[in-house]
Image (cartoon, rainbow, N blue to C red; front, side):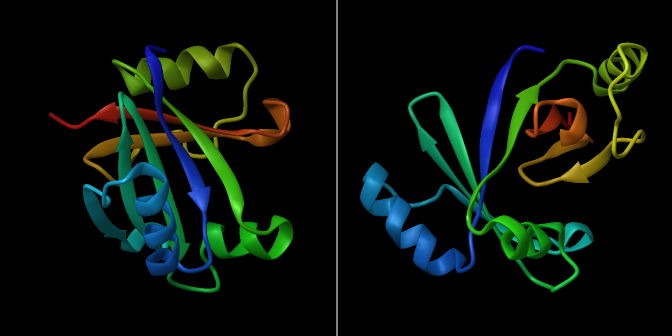
Length: 133
């Protein structure tokens, strides 16, 4: 793994949260995107070399909706950049981690993504991200 790619924060209202984070960072989000397959609308903020992703559910079946129902708004996941997501998935499976989606899928911000189950990672949902070329 190369670096933290972004930190994902589950929010109930993306528009209101964008205004809040605009005040915090002094800049608007650089990208708004809907990921229909995941049932979310997202926005991304840059803060120096760091990215923050805000995620709002678009359906009650969305993982973000279920997360907010259970835990409330807050940090949902930490994403790490990888060079080769397929080989990282295989390596982590051999290490005993549970991969929630063994086949990478298209995520937001032009990335292929896969997730590690939080039961094996001290309760933190870990996302692997590879830039789509």
